[in-house]
Amino acid sequence: MERDNQTWGSEFILLGLTSDRDTQVSLFVLFLAMYLVTVLGNFLIVLLIRLDSRLHTPMYFFLTNLSLVDVSYATSIVPQLLVHLLAEHKGIPFLSCAAQLFFSLGLGGIEFVLLAVMAYDRYVAVCDPLRYSVIMHGGLCTRLAITSWLSGSINSLLHTAITFQLPMCTNRYIDHISCETLAVVRLACVDTSSNEVAIMVSSIILLMTPFLLVLLSYIQIISTILKIQSTEGRRKAFHTCASHLTVVALCYGMAIFTYIQPHSSPSVLQEKLISLFYAILTPMLNPMIYSLRNKEVKGAWRKLLGHFSGLISKLAPR
Image (cartoon, helix red, strand yellow):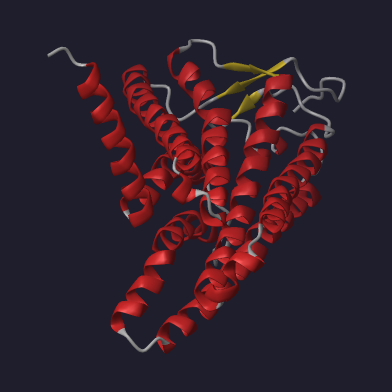
């Protein structure tokens, strides 16, 4: 390919999932519905935690952060995807592409670190319950949340800078649904093997280090639960971790499958489907998992709905 003065063009063209018009319209309706459910579900979780004083605990403080990350991650990708499904011209400006790469990569990293922080919180709750409030004090929770946001953001900033300093060819077509790192790197006019290795190593570190911390936490948690004599005690202890464990399996499971493969790296189609999984499905399911599998959240929902029902009955004409 020819070089265009070794500079980036003013915009890129995202090839997306399909060029079939009917399929694009169907996907638009599906993804729009899922995105609205995602925004509404995560907003309601944050609102519920804010309004119910019983949920003002470290676990729900981190859940608030997780909901904000989920809705932000989805918003960094899905609105642009929806526009491109209906638009004839599927261009994305240079600065918008760089911003999308930075936010999506950063928020994804933040989520993995945050899940490790939440695993530590569950470890303290199960393994050292008498000192839980002393260990998980407000200052520590704030520092852990800030660490999660900073680590993901710094990693994303470095990758964005590395990616957009590469000299680009005249090819402006990105074979992806968004400005994903490896998809953009493939447009470079130079050998990018070192960039790809650096990106992969950094991604695996940001993925595997939190995952190992989660694994260690749950080894200790399971060991402690098995030592509990009563069946009811074991059930209650496990119940405190059930929602988080489900979300961990959902998020880390796909990532481990993607990066730890015995054969070649993921295909372009796999990369697109993985991006859709994290941008649409995971943010939509997380608030549902915490609502359906968490007794405290369900109790808070019933209390909130009871207040609304009482308010409506008072306002209704007699």
